[in-house]
Length: 285
Image (cartoon, rainbow, N blue to C red; front, side):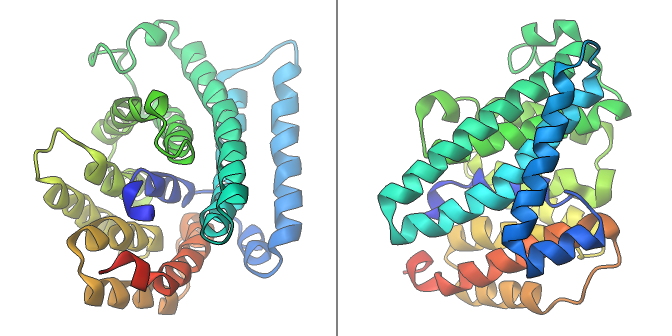
């Protein structure tokens, strides 16, 4: 069940700032199979550039971003639905997603290490680490996305679950630099991460709610992925079915956003909201 894997929605929130063009969003909504093929070609092209004699951190960042987006939008979303109908087939699809996320993680780590060669000795161990700047936020953000996806698609494998603090390190590092980045996208990711933390000692809901309010303020409540994350993680945890239904219906009926960076993520969020509502009898008892 989704409630057992709150890290899942970190990826939803992170991918919400995916390719922002209206044409990409339109085709994803109307022609998902065609969009999947086109998007995969973009992934392969980005990865192909990594074989060049001269590679730069931004090339690895782009490969990490695109593979993470592709894996979430087209493999994980399908796996979430398929496993309810055919467990074995769904499990195989999660394994495919994990392999893909592992590739994205390698790209993301290489990108950061090219910028900070000493990072490999610090990440998740020495909290001081390197001194990150505004230019580093996308690198921190997309590596966190890839790692969050791997943790979720691993379906509870210990070797991945224990890496959750690294996701936190990356997100918190980015948050400390600029919490308003991309309409509060980091706060959006922090909703589900907060619900996953053991160190909050029962204050998880309060922490997640704080980030939910912050992203609503920064996006003028137009980031629909934040609403879905709050419903799926916090409201299910509280067993607040009436608010869960109300919030997801608000997502489904929301007007189109005027923030270009949120267009594609909002389409994904609406699709997930409809699916979650169809499963409310399984999520509430």
